[in-house]
Image (cartoon, rainbow, N blue to C red):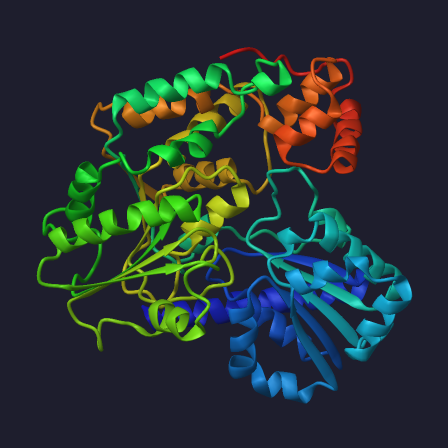
Length: 495
């Protein structure tokens, strides 16, 4: 079966390369949208062989460290190449045009078809400082070629990734397509919950009613529980979560994984503080579930693990053959959600409510790998799956459709029978009550704040504080929404 998968991925990658090269020759820019585990970095390097000069941008330094090892022959065949990060690119927004041009020319970039700029995780491009540099690149090197790579071009803030590449995107190939073709197994999605004291939920309902007192407004912000719940994380218990994990990881009659002698599990949190509060609790319950196993835990964040050896050891090198009866728990906020390729991953645990479509799809995308011996498994203890389906149903009722976001991904998986959903809520309403606030919101907090500005209820400056956004950028979005909505401004009501 594995040989068949490798043969299929070779065929699909070859078709993607051929289509991308053709579109680059036609327009100079193209965007590759392919699911996690498809081999987008490999595809981009094969395309880069057609050029003399390469400038490659990625979010993670660890990826820069691995590319020369994996693709050294290709890089060394080029006249020049530069591997950089988005952080490094953003810093250059303060350069003058002459300084910026000199920098890129010193990196070997030329204003002709012999130079290609490759943007890994291209959904990051619309960010303010990064986009300023990129659009200057288009002016300075209009004849160079530009290739973007992403699992989804959709952004929560509404900024358009496709327009950067003149909407020149290669044909769609989704996670569901990959499952249909036999590249991945069906996604197993377990809906669970933490043991949340009811007084916490009552507090959340009270907080929701006064969330915008500073703006003298009744506007309700979607994803409020994620922002507030953090201070209660020390009260949360994992008794029910432990029972659910045991049921699907180790119990003979219900386990979903194909082996139980080794597990590598990613656990995602909304912030470092919550991660630190939950670290010992997760370590304890896994020690209870697997009493004869060695339990290793590592927190991957800018605060905890700058050591690349720790990163590589936990994320890449452990496996069943050399670490029997071992559990590797890898705790992270956002450093494992993209540009990380790891085999032998048993499951992902969602211990955060995730608003960003990109981030959510990246988190669940970690479990897809053609070399894994286990089917993809997600343990959702924060109701993200229920939230996704509820919001999607609301949008369907209103005939609102979005392309390539989480609602469409779930809809496609469900309609094609490519997801097995295991509902372990069992009538308990803690997590359901926690989500009632969010599911009743009919527009995003960004759209809601813009609606309040257009209705004269709050100022642009107040809206910018609510959205944690730049005033100038928000003014631009307001003008766009004003044009889109016309006189039909959404009716924002108190929950």
